[in-house]
Amino acid sequence: EVQLVESGGGLVQPGGSLRLSCEASGFPFSRFWMHWVRQAPGQGLVWVSRIESDGSSTNFADSVKGRFTLSRDNAKNTVFLHMNSLRVEDTAVYYCVRAARTSDAFDIWGQGTTVTVSS
Amino acid sequence: YDLTQPPSLSVSPGQTARITCSGDALSKQYSYWYQQKPGQAPVLVIYEDAKRPSGIPERFSGSSSGTTVTLTISGVQAEDEADYYCQSADNSGSYFFGTGTTVTVL
Image 1: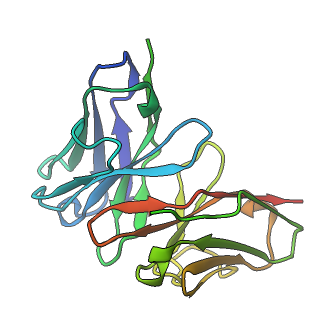
Image 2: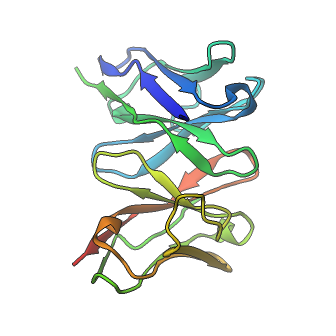
């Protein structure tokens, strides 16, 4: 079964850091670009970042650029979102998402992990 | 860039729901549609404007005209009640979602 499982969410104070993990199974992970998408409470979907299949290139939304980094370990089928200088407005459910190989479609989603930034 | 959707839409069972998504970039880039039910992760229902992934019912279809794309649900069923989001990308490697539409089945 194709699956993405996120972990690492929790409560953190403003200015703090958190690392989210996403473990993939059921498909050749090293061939796929991976993304993170977030959804604040009661709000819509917002794209956060993406990493190419070999980890050589990443891109970020302006709202997190300079604060978040993205890495992957293809040997462990895992992608990591490193979040620094967290703000209250970063509070959201964070989804790990697989990009389809031949298009910009987000074809597989994890169930999400919740990040709460609050003092 | 902005992708604009109507906030809400109400439809009776068996009727047709049409959800629009407008944005200048849609004339140059493909669109994608996602269904999200409460407490669940989104699910891809349409890709590259009009293609349907395997497992998605035939009553879901997509179309494109200029700067507007449309998701059509023909013969709406109660289980189609959900939030729907369009999505696209730009040439710089950034991705964008629409504002979302809540579909209520009366």
